[in-house]
Image (cartoon, rainbow, N blue to C red):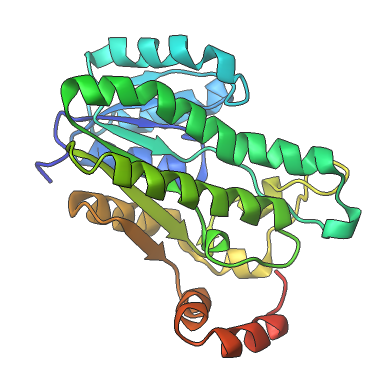
Length: 265
């Protein structure tokens, strides 16, 4: 796709899952890449694979919770290629715990990573996009950003918050060719449930049954880039779990009865 050739895509959470798959999809289309995350060794492995398809791929490892560093981080990212065309806000963590058992510190931790870090990074990138009068922000929300679900209260809250912020941003950018695409993945076969945190802050460590049967991350990534190419404002990606989204929109009374019967994982 010529739309991506020689364009610069900066992907957070690029060491695994959807972020890693996005890196490969962009690379195969000739894009230049900036890969970010905390695990530098894992990023280097992804970089090596990307360089099989593109000749420019940089690593910018940093902690998404260190929001105070973002101004310098964004300046460094922009210095690699002199521009950023796509900002892929993908970093985040999920949760598996009942509300009654979950201390507020866990809610804050999830909200800081899944919401405030995405907002903070975007705020620092925006002046660059405005100066170059172009740019595209891809935000990985979740179907949990469309409806609440068992054991994911903090995660769902953060994903809902992303929607409110970035839908507002899209309105404020209506007179500038800067685009916002909100992505709502359903069950994608990644390690998100394994890496999710429990009420005590430890790792869930279990692959959810539904997650294991989810669509492949590389297929998800291709669907995302297809939507980005078309400048879609939102993308729903998944299988039967998407029914709940449409049910809530068109038949809310039925939705509230049905969702109680859905298996938690």
